[in-house]
Structures are given as C-alpha cells and as structure tokens.
Amino acid sequence: MILTKVRTRFAPSPTGYMHIGNLRTALYGYLFAKANDGTFILRIEDTDRARFVPDAVDFIKRTLDAAHIIPDEGPDIGGDCGPYVQSERQEIYKKYAEELIEKGFAYRCFCDTEHPHENGEYKGYDRHCRDLSEEEIKAHLDAGDPYVIRQKMPLTGTTTFHDVVHGNITINNDELEDQVLIKRDGMPTYNFANVIDDHLMSVTHIIRGTEFITSTPKHVLLYESFGWSIPTFVHLAPVMGKNEDGSVSKLSKRHGATSFSELVDMGYLPEAITNYVALLGWSPKSNQELFTMDEMAEVFSLEGLSKSQAVFDYAKLDWVNGEYFKKMSDFDFSKAARPFAGELTEELDKKWLYACGLLRTRVSRFSEIPDMIHFFRELPEYDAELFLNKRNKVTKEIAAQVLEMAIRDLEAAPGWTPYSLDAIMQGVVAGTQLKMGAVMWPMRIALSGQKVTPGGVTELLYLLGQEEAIERLKKGLKKVSE
RNA sequence: GGCGCCAUCGUCAAGUGGUUAAGACACCGCCCUUUCACGGCGGGUUCGUGGGUUCAAAUCCCGCUGGCGUCACCA
Image 1 (cartoon, rainbow, N blue to C red):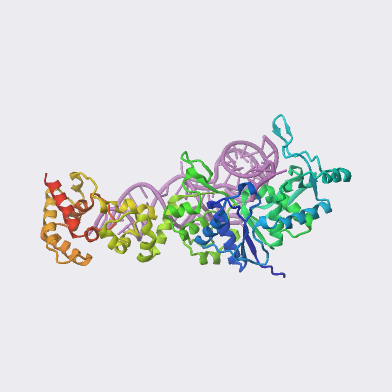
Image 2: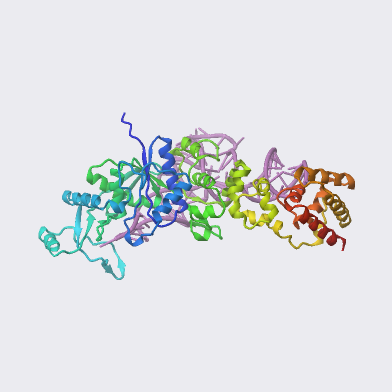
C-alpha cells in the first residue's frame, strides 16, 4: 500500500476580508490535514491584477492567525513548493500552457477581447481560433498580435469526477467552453493556475466551496491532458444567511456580519467562532459540540460533512460564545472585555476584575457589556412604581422601611467589602423581619433603577462604592416617600 | 433559460430498508432562586410533494416543487 501524506490547501484571493464561508473552508482544510498528520498549505490566488487589494495578503494571514488556523507552508513561511503567491509563478503557468499547445490540448486565440454578441446575447466563445492553420498563427505571431491561450475541450462525450461528499458527478462535454488558460496579460486564469499549483504542490485533497463543482470537469480534463493523477475533490455546501421574511440566501451584509473580523468586533471570541463555524456543515460522530482546536483536529473526518447548505444562526453562536466565557478565567475575561466596556466609573475601573466575575456568566458576547453596566455610570430615570413587587410582597411602605434602615447601617459601615456588606444586609433582613427577597428588591431598584442587574445587591453596593450607593438609596427613599 | 448540486423540528443536525426519528440552540411551561444568570424537569403534528420498488421507505428509483450554484481574458 502506498501511503501518501495528506496535503490540503486554502487558496483565497486577496480581497481584503475573510468571508465566514472562506474561513470555514480554511478550517476544514486545516482540520483534515491535522487529523491525518498532513500538511496544510496557504496559497494566494492573485492572478486578477484588476482586483488587487493592498495589504490583503497580510490581512488573510492575520485572520488565520487569530483563528488559530496555522499553515505549514505558505508565503513568508516557505516550503518546498514555493512561491506560494500565484503572481510570482507566472513563468510556470506559461510553460505548462505551451506544453498543452504542443500536445494539442490548447491553442492560441487572437480574437478581440470583446465577445461576439448575437442579438445582444453572448452565446459563448465561437471557437474561432481553434483550428487556425500554421500559416495563420505564424502571421499573427509575426505581426505581434496579442493572444490568449484556450483549452481545447472535447466536443462530445462526458466527463465524470468523484467528489467525497457528493459522489460521482458527470457533465456533458458540450457544456464546456474553450476556456481561457492564459490571459492576454500573461497571467493564468483561476481554472488553469489552480490545477497547475495543486499538482505541483502535491495537494491530495481539494477542499473548496460548491461553486466550483461546475468548473471541476474542466480541471479534470486538464489533469488528464497532462497525464497527472487526479486529486480527491471535496466540495463544501455554502453558508447561508436568514432573511427577515424567513427565506435564506447567501450570507451577506444584510444578515449582519459576513466576515471573521466583524464577528470579533461584535464581541465574539475567535475560538468560539471557529468552534461554531466548524459545526456549520460538519458534525462529529459524537454529540460533543464544544471543541478546542486540538480536539477538533483529532476527530475531524470527511464523513461528517453535510451536503446541504447551512444557515448561520446567531442564537447558537451566542450560546457557544457564552460557554467559552464560562470556561474563561475572570482575569482573561476582564482583559479581553475591557476594550468593549467603554468608559468606566472610577469605582468600576478599580474593581473591574471583580465586576467581570459577575459579567462573565451573564453575557454572551462582549458587546453586550456597555448596556449592562451603563447604570453604574448613570442612574437611569425610573418610576416609583418599580419598587412594587407582588411576588416579594413589596409595597412602598416596605421599600421605605428597608431603604431607611439600609442607609443608616451602610452609612455606619466600618468597611466596604463584599463580605462586610453581606453581613450588613443580613442585618437589615434580620432587623426588618422581612424575607430576603423583600429586602433585596427595593435595594436593587434604588441602586440601579432596573429590575435586572449583573449580580446581587451586595455586589452592586460594592461596585458602586459607599458614597454613590448611599446617594442612590437616599434618592430612592425620597422617590418612594412622595 | 441550459447544465449541475441540494431537500429530516424555527436553526444546526444524527440517521445509510424495520428506531418511540437522537442530540444541541432557540422557543414555551413548571421547579429552584436575592432579579438576571446558573441549575433541574417537562413540552412541540419535524422527514417538501406525487408516484413507484418492497412484507416494510426519512432511507432506493422517477416526476414535480422549492432553494442554491454555474454558464468571464473573476476567483
């Protein structure tokens, strides 16, 4: 048995951002390689000079890095199959295209850039130059006429290839156009360059989106023309977005974020994003859903890939992210959360680590934090009716009683720690003879102006600080006494 | 439009001829509770449709419908 080492590649074009679908493609390529002790290659497909975006390559690398998808070979990393940027491989493609011409599988086309149109409809290239005579070709060449190189497609028959997720796929050859291999500017087209590179880089498994299924027969024909072995194809179903009306369509801006970095900006953890994205279109054999990258690399297999499109679901991402928060230390959380928190009160800034202990389990993404802690900075306007609580049997009279006693005890507080504050509050409960809930409810309202807060009353007192806390309680007492 | 791919709860999905059709998220209800959260328990006409094949179909075949993709000197 011949053991060939698995080699996969991620081959993005440098457009300046990383679509979530692309990220997933990269992730699967990486995971599959790692799961098989293989090699993961990053290759930049920048053969379209018109679409050149400065710094895009750098951006791709930073994104992969942030997502912990680390290539073994690629630009700046090196490897035996470089260069890994297609624009630097121009001569290679040229050479192979010439080889194809010699073998009779390709030809020079001197036709105008403008497509021949019939009634305004483009009917495809008319193969005008497919059978030019030697003399005609020589004449054009001597005249220095620019040309492209086209693939000479079989006119009849069918081409079949095997896809790991879809099985055999067959297409009629007469569907195939004599596609351009080398453009007028000397650059190869995607359809040519990827075949040359995948072969030269010994890629064993081509993992890419379904949008390439229909062009795969052209690639297969190319492999056959060269006499090269055909790699294994793995075409991934797309990631969709949900529209307002319930329909789905390709994930785009109107669905929210479309790229990895936008998700990060929204306050999701890179690890959580990759974890969630991995589950969109792949399922492990077990019921496990939370995975570290290493765990995924261990269990990833192609059989788990699904054939049908998956809809990106923020609710589930929120859950995954929340689970990651729960596993984080308060310290790590506090550091990562700080940039999202906005301006803090002096007290809150000093006690940020403590506050994060409360926030960490109550938030599913960092960007929820500002709203959640806004009341620390500014007591919201609230209605005295808020003090009323049926379940805890809180009336305005009870609220006033509680607040009064709490203010008195808190003003006399010798210290201001969660521990001492808890003792004081227990004292208030005992002193008023009320149930815990009846005491805490009006306290929370007065301290925060809201029914829902991160943490309990003791925590709020502590985070507000003595001066501010007492001021708010007095304000509440006044309000409830009117 | 031609060609190709796809079709299991709202969403992600398991499932490969015989299952009470898993599990997760979300949702609803209840319990617990110092609100929220956490936790616990419980709930839901789910196999697009019409035909076959078979003793038996979510699973196999065909048509239909719907979604997606592709038909560039883009990738």
